[in-house]
Amino acid sequence: MMYAAAIMAILVTIFLALARALRGPTLYDRIAAMNMVGTKTILLIAVYAFVSDRHDLLDIALVYALINFIGVVAVLKLVEQGNFHTAGEVPPKTQPGAGDQ
Image 1 (tube, rainbow, N blue to C red):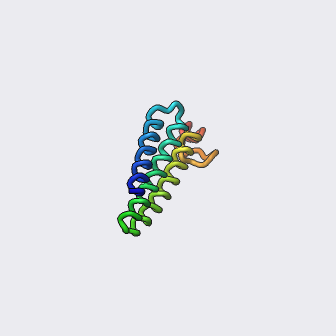
Image 2: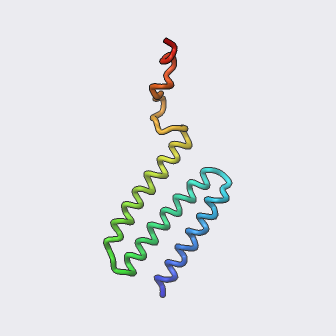
Image 3: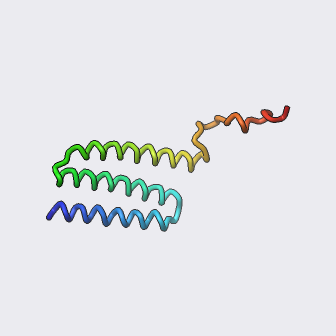
């Protein structure tokens, strides 16, 4: 009974975070909400693994946590810089003077 209440509470917070992701108001609120959805999904997988006595699901939760973290960092870098290149690096096609000859 206690685990069912925990699962329901996690599902409610996931739906609240999805509502925040849809409503915004800023892009950073949406990114934070999607990060929260990923984190709560990891927690949901962990609780399900404990309830069902399938501890191999914890490995899946850890991999999902890493993917969630890398995805959020990549999206924030894309929003901040406008590309995935390092700061100051110019792609070969857009270098000044490359097409002048």
